[in-house]
Image (cartoon, rainbow, N blue to C red):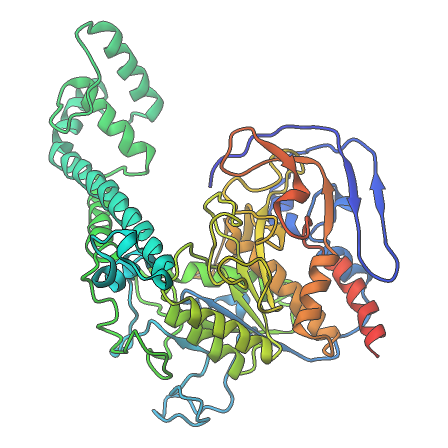
Length: 568
């Protein structure tokens, strides 16, 4: 993730909780932006600002003060994501099991449309039991689908009813062309690096016989060469093989982690797949799945939600991390502690390399709702959508069945009031939500200063509901590991875990009520922050989301208690 600059300043702390009585807490002390210890960094998001001077979600405070047991024994939280490491030590006992299904008998015992769905379902699963590794980008799908209608046509030739799709097609086409150009140039550069690799290595041996050079040493040599050779002019020519260019090639390789020839070849192969699969309108990403991508249907895919083959660790990382934040075992004294113990994680696979398919997203939501999930974690978003109607229908279906959905705002540093991200709860050209069960979350850091909002996070006064910790979050990862990661993806399970706690203790509250409780009970920080995507533009933190707040578990549980009493 991008590095964060530290700027210490004075500010007032204000927190409000909308209920029958407005609660205001003001702290006029100077906030010390302290460096966190390794242990504090691992658990910072669970802290409370007033108690710990760390702007977490006040989870530990709630556990310390709560003396009651939940009314519900467990709650199902669906995680629509990548594959998951189902064998992770810290997720044992925390995963959903479909007790209505007899394992591996090849029969749909519960008649839900999915055979042997013991622990969830992979909507990108292949007929052979594997999964699709490479998907297309959504803008590639749009160009493929709408090219016959709009290619080479002017706006005057388009039916007014199709103007939006026409504009989306051209926006997608522009994106596709730019990305194709970028990756093809990158691949061309890598091809040259491979061709000159031996020459670079042999040349550098003259200066470093043991090949024990560092990036800094190469940089010094490069600068020295520029000074000594008055004829030298840095040229970005792929055929440039003078000393300065050779040093530069190696410096670039080290900077991006390509320490060996094999590293460069691996990157070559990846870029080749991006160009010929992700960006290729003719690539058939559904061939191995065998479904009809233009029809919503049950049963396609397979039940393999945890592919443990060698080399597949990275594809499991994302979902495993989301699951850990929500419900890593709190009682086994290993690893981390999830937000709640009384949860069953339902993994639903839709994500691989590139963009999720709208069909898979919609069908995963339907599956989650129909099989008992009350909360759905969606740590993904996209500024393009080929089938917006499918996504909207799935959201309203979940609303009718009292299911709360939480989606990441996205990591593109964009104002989502200007660029719509999907799935969304607003219609085109409207600011009114058509459903009341979707929460969209941005990311904050552990530094309550001008860098409080993560520099990668999307934002929006109308289309981002609130913020939650998503920067340097320590969680479970594949192969029984634990790692730090950052992204609005990590902010989503914070909210899902909180929603699970509310619904465990106050099961009579509706999804709509839970959403409003979470938004109303957040912590308000009265400070100026740098707007993501800008170098120094600052606004009040409250201007970057609808609620203007950060998730607070303790406040949410207090407010839920009051709302629940009123409901009785």
